[in-house]
Length: 346
Image (tube, rainbow, N blue to C red):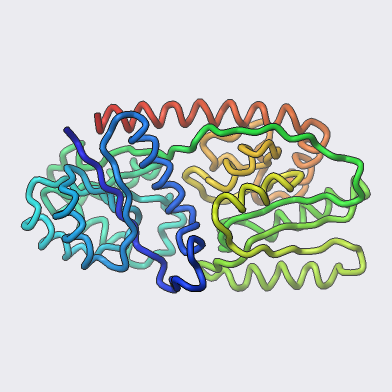
């Protein structure tokens, strides 16, 4: 019988007094918890743990005795596996990547670490996006004269199919548009903000542009500074930037439910949990082709603010179709995810 253990690293600035559950309310934790619960519901023995550093891994594995350990993202130093695989020779270690190559380019040690992981007998690379899988295969097959196909495993993201309905309100004099997610350049906040302003002007409403800039990543400081500067310069128009703090998942879903339209027109994605959160709450979504489950009818060009504004207008006048189509596509994607995971671990 296979036993799966997910292990995540707690955020560097975690403080039990300040963060409480918020310290774990990240996309990475939510992603792992969804998959952990999905496996358990499917009859697989699975547990999830959050540790301070890689020195805690041995004790956890010794206590739980898993057959498979899934390390979520790049945080375990490759040399650690020289020790771990000797201590636990029958364990299959899977380093699961959560990013496409454009985002991975900003993590300075990524290529070195992925290559080094591949040199260990029982260490495997898990990938959640087909393009990234092809690129990792290219790297590792070039590095090794022989590379077993099962060394790289396709393990896409799962999302629980708990959807609600929401009535769209066009009677108010404001429009609430959410562009949630960690602030970093590839998330494309600034162009989307300009598009939202253009759209709000067109329909004659004051814009509330909602972000949650509690996490600034990968030179995202310039992005948030430009967002603030943009709305300060346009303060006389009545349009405003509203920044929310990161919250536990239940509160975040309540916040999503209060939005009119969601924007996730990103340059690089592997799944986009924030977009799924908005759609799950009945909020129409404008995405980009980078989101593997989003409807091409409502995807916009990340470099074209007019295209984004036009798609916002389409969602504004036809919100129910947007939500229905995206929820169906998300369901199809996650049903396939469940099949892939259970086939591998059952």
